[in-house]
Each structure stands twice: as C-alpha cells, then as structure tokens.
Length: 268
Image (cartoon, one colour):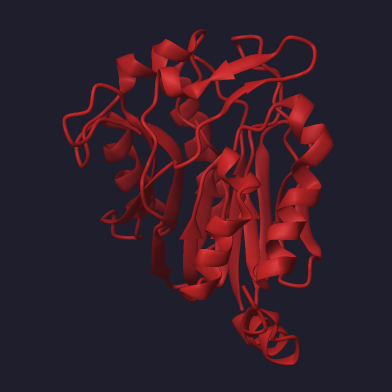
C-alpha cells in the first residue's frame, strides 16, 4: 500500500501567503508518509476578479509557481499534482487552467489543461464565465506515478463521466480531481459525484477542494476526500485548510475489477 494526500486550502488574492500555507501542508503530508500529494484548483491564487489570474499567468516550464512546485517536490520528496495554475501556451490570448505534475526530483512529468469550463448561471443569481478568462483544453492526460496510473482532471470536469471512462479504458487506477466547487453546487452534488466516479470506474478518486470563505467573497464547499474503488470514503475534511491522508492498495483495486468486471461488460 502507498499513502496519498489531498490538500484542502482557502486560497486568497495573496500569492505568497497561499504558497507559504501550501508549503506547510505539503510538509505535513510528507511527514505523514505520503508519496504523492494533490493541491486544489487555484491553490496559488484566487483573485478579487476572474481577470486577475491573467496577471500571474506563466509560460510552460517557466515561472514563479512552477519553480515553487519543483522546489517543494525536491524538498519534501513528494510527487505533486499542482491543482491548477494559469499557463499561456500555443500563442493563445487566454491561458489554460493547467494541472502540472512534478516528480520527487522536481521534474515535470505531465500537464493537463482543463477541458470543461465553468460557464453557468446558478439559482440565486450566482454566475460564472470561465471562458472569458481561460481557453479550454483539448486532450485527456494520464501519468504513471509510483502510486499508480493517474487520470488528470479539474473541478467542472467531474460532471462529464465520459472523460473518466476514457481514463479507465486506458488503464487509469486513480482519478485526480482538484477543485474549487462552489458552496451551492458542492452542497447539492459534490459527494455523490466524487463517489460515482470511483464506483463506476472501479478506481480510487483523490479530490482536494477549496473549502471556506475567500477574500473575494466567494464561498467554496470543501469536503476534500479520497474514495476507494468500492465507493468507500477513506478520508474527508469538511471545512478550512488541512491534509486528508489515505492508503491505497492496487491489489485490492485489481481484485474488485476482476470480481466485478463491469468495465469489460459495456455494450455501447
């Protein structure tokens, strides 16, 4: 068995303060025996306005946040999945929401761009338009790590089960879903969606979330958790900042997939 950590934060508009708090939580995860830690969406920065993220956007392989991720990975001996940061690429005017995976030597091993952007009008007048400040990603990404093969995603992707079915079909054993779910949508759907993605794909799910009142007034749901392939919640934190630890057993996962081979029974 290997230990993984989901990091819950309440990120603000203060980049340095966010990185300092994230470093403390990564250190805690490492000291607790984690091999891999996953930070939430927007772990480094949540601006007063959505356009504020454009001011901290980096280019792939270069920038303060990416350098910080590499340094943290080396210092604490962790593989780190870096939630999401804004990255400009391919000459586009808008950045991607990019999930950067670094190994314990600080080298980038994978990068996923959020495919589904949160353009919604919620009950009560709450409205979001991520497509005004972000470009959509185009491709699923899996990465092989010491804890298993991981399918990468970000937040709103959680609502699109076909993405995770694709990951299962390509051998993913763990699904990573760093998020900043709103209080409204989280209260209604977060727990059931996270457990559903685990159950229907017979995969572990690690789902770190933002969890509290942010400096821009936004309220996020929290409830960061790790779920096993049978749908059992192995660890959970409702509010505030902290680390959710869980031990994963890939032999048990393979036993579940062998005894209940629903992934091979699909008729569509």
